[in-house]
Each structure stands twice: as structure tokens, then as C-alpha cells.
Image (tube, rainbow, N blue to C red; front, side, top):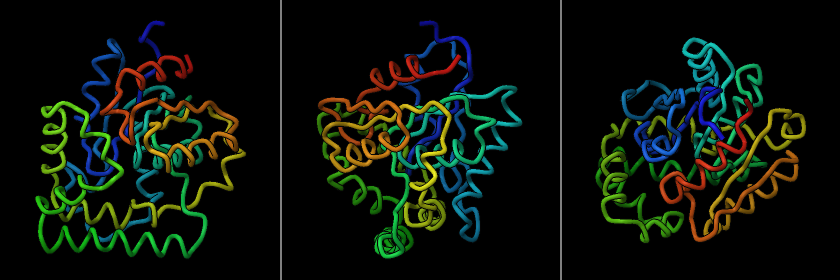
Length: 251
């Protein structure tokens, strides 16, 4: 299938940058790609007081509206997938189709959101008290990223360099504004989605495989589980993500 056609919008994950899509984009020659930095990340430093999650959804919608003259195929990973789902729900006039990797549609209860907020607050304290280096070291030790030990050292080092490029105040803002605890729960809104969506997760990422399978049943959409991979398919299996984009992209 030709890679020429509908423009692509790429949304990176928490602690990522637009550079994280370089390898994936190299597998999609000829595409028109819009790859913005999410607020709180590289280029945004400290954006100010926390804001509602959907304010970033609105900012990204305006970015698409002003930068691209037609509807886009959206590609979102983790935080980018959550914001991407917000765009699919709030601005279907801008999103023709979507590939969402490692999607969490939201925490369904107030108690769950409060528990997650307390966890995020611990990360914020680490950022504010010990700085970006200590934060990145602790962030990379999470079991969620254990599968990345199989990657080449230069790939892991490039990701670490991206993470270290952020301002600690910016990432703290992102946790307070865009963290899972702060986003709306979109579960009840999934049945009204009419935009073609393709969900993806790594087989070694049990939590997000389960979340994706549940969401796919509600959305009545395709769910791909990539064998031998973990949470960050963009980093671990860019070939599989590129293939999914080409298959799921609405012309």
C-alpha cells in the first residue's frame, strides 16, 4: 500500500519528545506528518498552573486545524493515546482514523483516581526535590519498561537522552494536568465513537493488553497484540506499528 495520502498526527508518551517517532517515520516514507511536543515536554518548560486534561485536547485540535488542511490519521502512544482518544471523541471532524498504542480510557471511580493522584504526587516530589536525573533513573526502573532490557544499548541510551532533555517543572506540570488521575473517564463514551480505531498493545504488557481488549470490545474495533513486546511498541516494534498504520489509515 502506498504511504502517500492522508496526513498523520503523532502524539508521544509521557517523558517522550517528537524525536521518539524518528524510527517509525523512517518506515513511512513520503508521509506528511505533524509531530507536536505535548505541553510540559521539550519546548514547553514550565507552562504555569495545572490545567484540565481536555484543554490540551483542545490545543492539539487547534494545532491540527491550523497546520493541516484536511482530516488526519492519528497515531498516539500511552499519554498520546489518551489525548488521541479525547480528540476522537471531541473533534471527530478532524480525525479520520486512529492507531492508539497502550490506551487507558480512564479510571472509572473517584477512589481509583485519588489513588493514582497520590502516586503521581510522589513522582512530582521526586522531580521537584531531586531533579530530572534522579527521576529518570527511577522512572526507567518500573516493571512496565522491563522488556526494554532486550533492546540495543544505543536505543535505550537515545531514549534516556530524550527523557533527560525535559525541564523537571514541565514534567511535574504534565503529571498534574495530563496524568491518568486527571483525565476524564471516557469508558461510557466509547460506544458512540464512529471513527475507525485500531488498538495495539505488547503481549508482555498484561495490564494494557487487558485494557485494550476491553476497550476494543466496546468500540467494536480491531485489537492487535504484538508478541514478545512490552508497553512501548513505538520503541520496541516500530515495524509492527508502521504496518498497523498502513492497514488502518482511512484514505
